[in-house]
Every structure is written in structure tokens, then in C-alpha cells.
Image 1 (cartoon, rainbow, N blue to C red):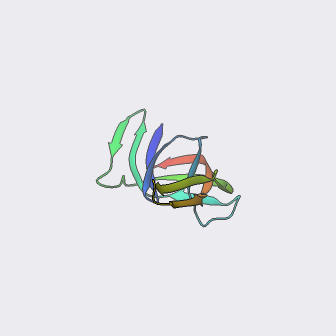
Image 2 (cartoon, rainbow, N blue to C red):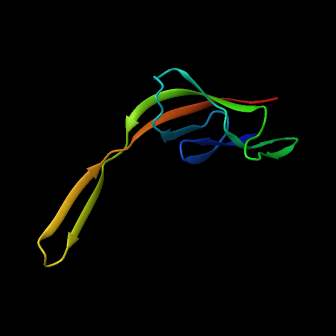
Length: 104
């Protein structure tokens, strides 16, 4: 059994027990998060595709940690013009363990 959920601007395929890194959620570590935007749900009876969301299905998970990813360096230059710019970026992510997929 699995589901496709929407969190932020991205879609994720999740199963029970899976851990995934999402865009930062404003939820403390150890708390429960519920994803109500389920786009697709599959179990042994078949596949249900939402238009746009599947009714009666939700996904529950536990926030494990709030971390920042490795630094990504952005370097721009124009040759022979003495133009160089270096910028770094660290994205904040939330690690979530999927505990239960509820289907009505």
C-alpha cells in the first residue's frame, strides 16, 4: 500500500515506515503531522486517483528532525571582465517518518 502526497510545491510517493526529507515544515520535533492532500492511493483492492484529491484518505507521520542540507555554492563569472560572484545556500528540510496511511 502506498500513496502520493503533496507537501509544499512537490509530490512524494510514501509508504508506511518510510523516512523522507520535505521542505521545511513549522512543526516541532517529535510531533505528529497529517497530510490531507493525497493525490493517489493504492492498496490491494486497486488504485484510486484523485480529481484533484482522493476523498477519505490521509497520511500521518512523525517529525524526526529539522536540519539544513549541505551548502550549495553558486558561482557566476564573466571572462575577461573581472566579474566574479560567489554565493552559498543551505536549504532547511524536515525529516518525517510515515507512520500510517488512513483510508476510509
